Length: 598
Image (cartoon, rainbow, N blue to C red; front, side):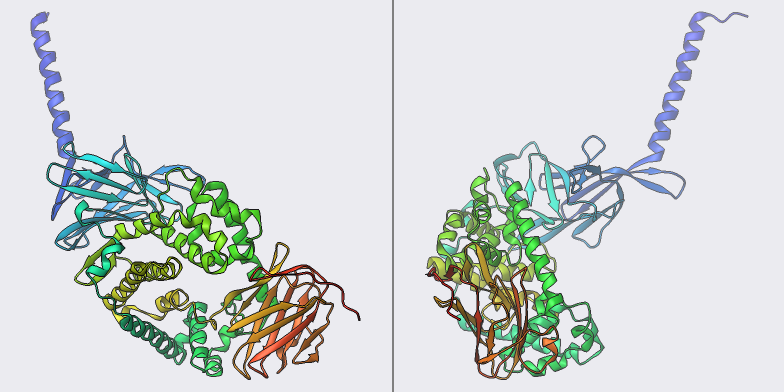
């Protein structure tokens, strides 16, 4: 029996229509949208149903807040970047709402991103805080703006955005037109209202705030007392095994200042003195200088490598490295240091982040005090660094604080920033920088619960706030033989290094009477074992640290002189009978030496 062609067409059409409806219904049934509104923070996700009770998140998200849209999709994914530059897309694994102000997204590679709202001064800000997995140096998150928003200004770290009635600012470690970049070190981006008429500057701070220097001094004493108390408490319990080298070093330094050096040393557990937690850092208090010096040599090599890399890559992060100022002074006569200080001038758009700005200010201040011509390389970039700090400051009711993410480093970062301003004020005679720095530190201390200031945090800020305590291990620059710096790693209050015309080196070391400390000198010319300590000829002995007296060893190849000094006078004189060499002291005076008549 033949079917009429028209009926056949109708039958096929109905079959296709039924199949289309079935596929549509099936897709609608197995895919759904998750939509959440958290006080104006809008979250949109998609999920697929695998069974009656099982669902899987699709690899996409969208976060929208006041016209800023952060998102990831197959066409425009968020991704991580490794050290070697390779990229890998982030795969969304789960989401949660930790509280009524935040959204947490977790990804398959252990990366997570927290979006949270924080209210300050009647304005609510959006913070984006990333924790990239260990395999990534940074992650990039796509962003866009609503059609009614205009980008008025854009740099590599901030963007000012306007609507008809409002202004906003978006800040991050690195911004492009379409991505926010967050790194292992700079984890936070911020989106907030912006009022150009209310920009904070240090110039007008004196009109609104009374800076109490007495309060500052009292706060510093409070931190000193807290450190001693909290470390001492640990030393008297089983927790003494968990003390870090940093905590012990700061504790001993403060105890020397209080005239309690031997008491402090007696409390340090033998497991630390003889264990593997120790490095060159604490070596001025303890023995085993030959082994500890290996770490000091490695640190010097590390500085050299970091400086070379920074010059090649024009990386401002070199100015944030702890101790880089001392290294610059040690190597100041080399071309490499000049190239290092020229890095800012070689960057087309000089846009340092906060820590880089603080680092540049700190290095400038150190060079200004010790080697003023070198500081000139950085002078023209100071105002930009100050502006970076000002842009992050909020002044309210006599308090000054940095708008940072709510993490454990806030207190340290604020103290570091405030201290850099105080030091800069002494160099450039700008009272407002000193007042701004003091106010930042006073506010940070007042706003931080004493219980949260544990001994680890106090040890972290101690060398920043109390670098005038010379009993804390430090670099002492003593002079130069050509390009070779003579310097010491020491906890002595002062070391004076002079050279006579007949090549006799006189080293005067100031340290409390009857107490013992250790010094590692570098760049000392060969003295062929001709040395006087306490007006007596001393012979070298590899076991010198085990005796209850002064002693030394000298490594000819590295020109390293390791000294144990047990003071029979407050200022001990060490005399070295060196080979003749042209010497320049730290004041720039040059001594032409000649051979002695034996």
